[in-house]
Image (cartoon, rainbow, N blue to C red):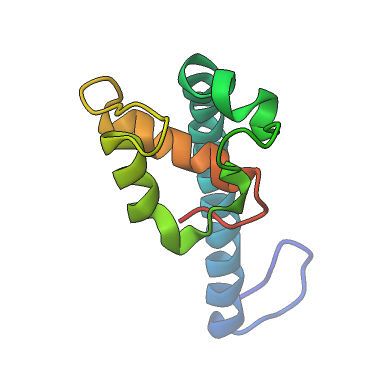
Length: 116
């Protein structure tokens, strides 16, 4: 078997090359999907959260800094948003599950945490 460059290679090397190319394509697709999720989350944030939590997640200290949320705090985030907390009103019945996912993706993308 030969690669495009004309070098002989074993079937094993050819399979590894094909697997690597497939993985690169999957990562590119996932990255594009993640980016769409993050962009949608930014819209949700701008519509519902920005007034209290600040432009682009930069709050003035008057409310919780959402950038402090860690990936393992997703349930805490959901509970606080849906049920309200402190001065924040509950958003249950206003935000859909899909919007919560989008919002979480936007927040995590801006904290330096990986999407979870």
